[in-house]
Amino acid sequence: MSTTLASLIATVFVFTALAATGCGPQEQAANSPAAAKTIRVAQSGQAEVIGADNIALQQAADMLKPGDTLVIGPGTYRMDNSLFIPCSDVVVRGTPGETILLKGPGPASKVVDGGDYGEDVLVLAEPEKFKPGMGISVGDDNYSGDWAITVTSIASMSGDTIRLKDRTLRDYDYETKNARVESKFPILCGIGVKNVTFEGITVDGNKAENPYFIDGCRGGAIYLYQSTDCTIRNCVARNYNGDGISFQITDNIQVQNCESYGNTNYGIHPGTGSPHAQISDSHFHNNDSIGFFLCWRVRYGHFTNNVIENNGNYGISIGHKDTDNLFENNTIRNNGFSGVYFRNETFKLSGHRNVFRNNTILDNGDAKRGYGVYVEPYAGDIVLENNRIGDDRQSGERSQRYGVYVVRGAGKVS
Image (cartoon, rainbow, N blue to C red; front, side, top):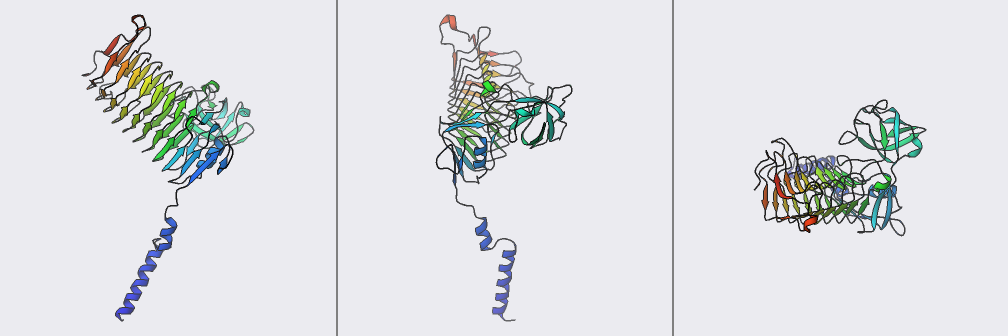
């Protein structure tokens, strides 16, 4: 065989092999990323989707591909289910102060049949309160919070029977433990996403018409779960019957220039293993329980230039394996029990090696108790550096009786 013929056969063989493995020029072009798009949803005018509720928002969100931006126009959007962001590497943007996601009124019903673990069909006592597509939670007296409730949607209905989008996570007892369905869910959320940005959006939980509480494990006005490298910027979370901002099982979440207030539980709640969080230039105030709650395994975070004030119990609460965080240049004032509270844990599970530097901790406490920093056993190796801790009110109004109170059995505080 001539050298020329052999070369021609080899060339044909290589080209055919490349085409067969999907690496030919046409296949590469087909797989190249499309140009980033802006998808708009508005209540009127020109937009890809026109509407004023979660259905319109979800229709627009489902058009997103990595690199795209979803722009939500001004107006109040009624939320009877979550706005789920279905993919990574996207921006969801509103008009600050004008784009409002408002939770609709929250119905509830007892379950009269169904509800065992792994079921997706329930029979309701009051099915007329619900409709397909609504977001709901399923629980009972034993399983009413944390990870034990099932947060899902109504996929379809027939008479008094609903079919769930997801199967139940526990055995919910309708005979002795009041198994029930309640309209409670995260409002703006990302689950299993990376590099998603929320910005310029106000999320209102409408707690006056939503009496059913959901904690930050499964809910929040703004909620991230099993997500990384996400940013919440210039957003407001308010009036939610639960936590304002919650992110669980996450890494490297940034919260910038946000406000969270009027929530039944916590203003902001990083937890369940959420290292490397960065929370800055934000305002957490007038929440019923705690302004800034570090849940379990919040580590290596940097929390700076925040104002945390007028919260019912504590400004900042630190506990289970919440270690190696830096709190810097924050103002923590007018909170009910103490400005900063280290929760009681065993030695191995305590919030060790947290540093507070250049913070202002003022005017905390109520008529019965008042502390700037309160340290329970067995938190230790806590560094307080160049903070201003005191009470600036008139003598008859002062309630912060102790600057730093270390309970016997706690570790080193320096």
